[in-house]
Length: 99
Image 1 (cartoon, one colour):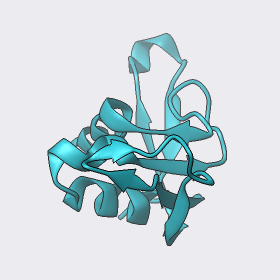
Image 2 (cartoon, helix red, strand yellow):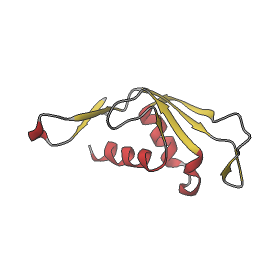
Image 3 (cartoon, helix red, strand yellow):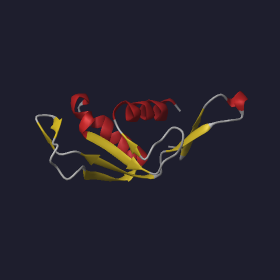
Image 4 (cartoon, helix red, strand yellow):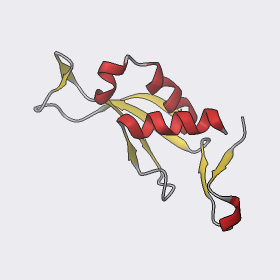
């Protein structure tokens, strides 16, 4: 696995990159009936590793329950925010596999 992957039009001389080796934490919201609990203390930690580790663990979760999970990491603008969830994580997973 390469530490940094680039995307974008190489003709632009402007490429965005994502470092999948950056530290990240996968968190899960307390839930009841596959719904976030409103009176909880917030999400709790499941995985403390790299962005790649957290994406892999996130994608291993059943699709109907992925809305309960989020990844916290250092921002890598414009592609990676400090908190990632849902379809954004799925897109990063596809990007990681494509490159």
